Image (tube, rainbow, N blue to C red):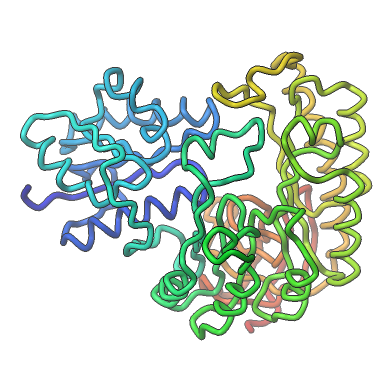
Length: 440
């Protein structure tokens, strides 16, 4: 295959983003070019998500839309990631717009598959790769923000979730390889540790939990300035982890703790291990040990048999817990999950109403939290310029990239990736507005 220019559209979560970056790394190592201008790509990769029906729909629509680039220089479309990994049997005969299909572990088969495609064959290469998860990466985030995926798969088997069927059992990546990868990322202001469940790191590989050890070792790297922890399951947040977050100056005082619900009966139906009382006790302990801790979580509304009383109790949980940031999702009935077969499914209109009500409830809480910062001086990392608002855009410690709010600020000048002290002048439901005081 002669020299080609590659482009990529990566859909889904930050874990999927890392997989896409490894695929781009394979391309660059082979000496091929990458472009951000999709109209200039001769080979276009659509890296897909398949977690929910909406994600699958988005992935297929993206492939169909991408086919329009064939009117220009586009020659081949590659569909990679979770969608073909799980649904290749249905996908391959129907999605004829795609020339090559790769699963989640097939980056090393990209070029051999493309060679066959350029000879006129449609290629199903799903499952043919070596599964090398630690190859070179091309970073697609802003240079000062990078993700480190510390494991793949999941062994929790929540009753609503397809991840174990798509990505298999929980598999920790060896610590020495993760440390080498973190070193290879270069100067990094914010390294974000991700996995389906970061807090179980090492249990499968070493026979004991090594998450705190991993954090300690990453903290020793001179090129890593700050570490953010995402997807920490509540039952695994113990005294050692709390102490590490409290005492390690590199660890951002922020925890993403996926709860999914607050009511014991629904949690049990979901296959979750915690209870309402345990969650509230955990928040109390975190705040007593780390007073400035920011807690983020996600909730599912409209799980099968969820009553109006349980929904109202979830709203009360929000007002009691006073979480810094929350995301809410309507339950999605996914085939091949235990919840799919449950009775008592909630009408779509009711689920939509409940999600809207939860967002409204949390908006009041978030507004109160943000209002408390008005008049204060806070540290903010600059993420760039918002040209529409004619100001700089950044984040303080309780705002993770892309999922939480932002700080919009004015200054004579500001540099992406640098940190500044800002005086907060006003707030809305999710964002803060400030003026720069000085650079750090």
